[in-house]
Image (cartoon, rainbow over all chains, first blue to last red; front, side, top):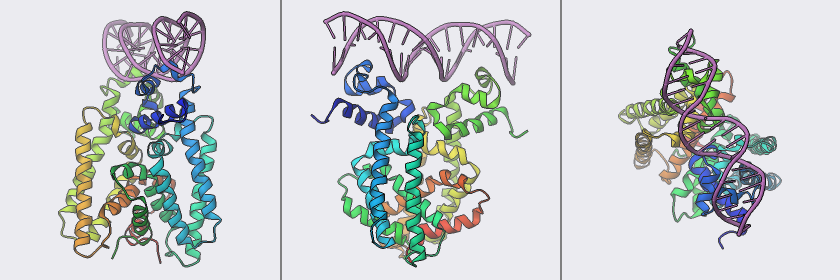
Amino acid sequence: MKYDTRKDQIIQTSAILFQKKGFSAVTMRDIAKAMGIKAASLYNHIKSKQEILSEIIISLAEQFTEQMKIIKNSNDSSIDKLKQIVALHVNITSKNQFEMSSLNSDWMHLEAELEYYLKLRKNYENDFRSIIEKGIQDNELINGNPEVMLFSMLSTLRSLYIWLPKKEDLDIGKFTTELSLVLINGINK
Amino acid sequence: MKYDTRKDQIIQTSAILFQKKGFSAVTMRDIAKAMGIKAASLYNHIKSKQEILSEIIISLAEQFTEQMKIIKNSNDSSIDKLKQIVALHVNITSKNQFEMSSLNSDWMHLEAELEYYLKLRKNYENDFRSIIEKGIQDNELINGNPEVMLFSMLSTLRSLYIWLPKKEDLDIGKFTTELSLVLINGINK
DNA sequence: GTCTATAGCGCGATAGAC
DNA sequence: GTCTATCGCGCTATAGAC
């Protein structure tokens, strides 16, 4: 069996469909059809369409939060911490390609967990910003606008799910190094 | 009057709602309510919900295509061309904040114009890639992976619509310069 | 050009047989 | 655990009065 549980299969199948059309445009009948069963049968394993979305998003958001905490509390240089953040995004994205689309594009359709998600995201961005600001203070980074630096890095990292799947047989380690180089040192000779 | 035509008002009102919840989750009743009329009245000005989406997306995609053509055909250095692409994105995004969300997130809901949109996007990316490759050849850019460079820059530029609105009283010119600096020269001291 | 009314359909979810 | 049948509702879009 490819999946641990039927619920697991529902979530992973849904994630694939959500990436293609977005949460709102995917129906329970679509999900069921992709699994070869009827829509009513889904409700023996999940209690609502909302629950599927929550499971996808909250699980990922918590993984990012947890790993960021470790990076933040290490004694590495700011540059090294930024490289670890790049690696974190590449790793989670390569293992959760479809789910990352919901995290980025469907979070506004959360209901009960919306506030919790927004809190996790805010904390993540604040930690990221602190690392950049410390890097500027310590003269590791240029004395530029930290908001622009944060925006630029985070936008690229959040878009990874769109690009990673296009590179078949990708060497994850090599890609991480190349991306860190471009994001940190730029492209100018 | 704030809008040239009623149709114009429908399109701009829709764009605001589409950014908040996505095309599929916005109903004709939502759009009408935001304008203070009934849903049925919308159909005197547009022929379908689809038409609203097409008007938003195709118009923007054609603006990018047209401007890229001018940049591509100029005699400037590759670095200067890249700076002009950054300025192009900042300019169009600052003038079409809400519409940019549909261009980035709702294009898959296009029907008749989907192929045309995909063609325009493909051409745009190819032109962008060519400028980067020429920059590497001419020794203006580092001898890195052009796909990674393209991915990094384009991801950031495509996400501008999320970040620009957060900066009230933004000096567009200054922001463009700062962003070009970060994207081209990196953040490393 | 906007309205009321409604056609026709698809949605999420439930009931209950097997 | 899956099925058939169906409820109640909201959707896009149209008809036709004013």
